[in-house]
Image (tube, rainbow, N blue to C red):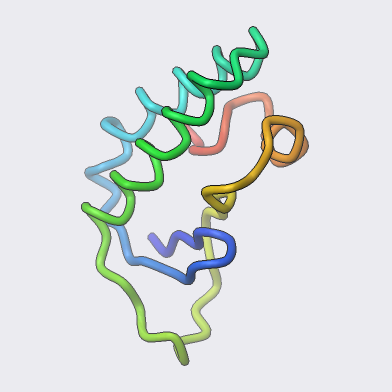
Length: 92
């Protein structure tokens, strides 16, 4: 699966990693619902770091369609709320 981190680029990520990422996504959703900005910020960074760690970066000139788009590291809680579906950032 191709994942885009807004403002950074794309990575190729094996579907086998989604269970691990879903835990962070669930935590992020809870923090957004509670409005806990500090925990939201930590979890967003942990999610993006994990995607970077597990994924393989695509070249900057690659124009692959992204199957998943994640917010930029500096995205606000409200910006991420606008991006979310009912299932979170990562489809389950």
